[in-house]
Length: 257
Length: 222
Image 1 (cartoon, one colour):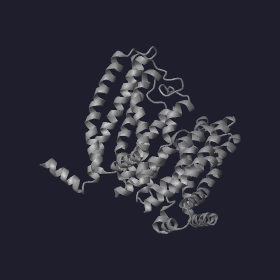
Image 2: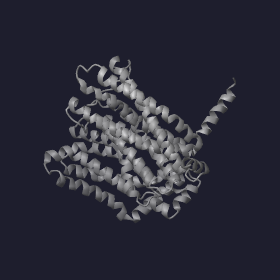
Image 3: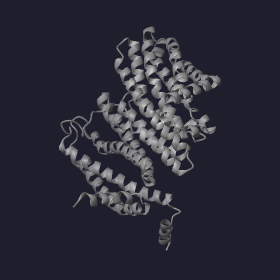
Image 4: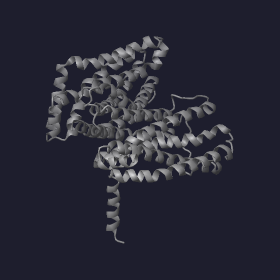
């Protein structure tokens, strides 16, 4: 086992990821697995979190929205980073499929950002006494993240040529990435209403195992769900981008037959 | 290298002063927004004193966006931007010169106008140096952000309306530290903390912004 074959195998994998028919089939093969796994994990995590986990000593049952709120907030930021990285790869290596991934992530990320904001408001009412607090940095920057997703989509739509839309909007996605660390550290830099970090902090998670395990299951389930949606969207996006090529025509002919 | 920078700076400044109506519009816009605010909210002295700083910052933000809409458009339309792209000078340097030129005709007058408006909003006289220092550190960042927006939308016909949507979400940190510095200045407390952070943002944006702006201009016109 010398280093060269592994490297060449990696290169081959990288180049295959630039091939639309290959990625179309890959996404088609992955989607059912991701879909099934995410449904199972979400069902288990939801039952465990909503029924089996003990109520919080301070917040009672209202804390249980954590099982929706934290995964969506995590996916809103993770989604933005994924979008920006895909857009950067597309810009730097002129890889059109990477732009396709960024395009597919944007609406998903926007929806998860909206979900994080809405569930946060629902959670905030019983615990903080308010749906929304203008003075809280994390809330503000999460809202700005939603605007960044929307700005990315609007900028894309205002170009007629897809190629130019890809490359120009990629730059915006990359610039907006500065927002993500600000959201993550906002609760440490400005201690206002939103609670501090629970999972990723020095000294390990500050949450009891009974509550932590269903949260981790939900995080995994949400991530796989995101991946599932991404695969389906990516297939559609590839077909749209490649609609003039022979392999898509053959595919359509097969489907019609 | 420095020759090209100075050359473009001089050219843009000369062009700006020859079309002084375009130069004055954002500044008048700034004054109008700030003076309409007491009509919309309340002319009450205590309330103006507490919200005056915020009004100044919002007006500065909006007028800096307005000012930079046309930063690359005229040059892109008459083809001189393409010549600059093809030329030997690094495009980032060219873009930086254009940003500096535009900042000196849009940001610097703001530093003069803002204290006058601040006084009319009953901000104490002692708060003015802090306000000017904060604006002096914040306006370069705002100019760079607006330049990125202008470059991203340079090839669009309806570019002006989108710039705000793209760039305003990124101005959050500037606004937070800027208003914080102004509040501290009004209370007569030390304001070095937010000023340092504004300076850090300015260094970050002035060093990285032109590179991104240049990439955006090149992409939009290729």
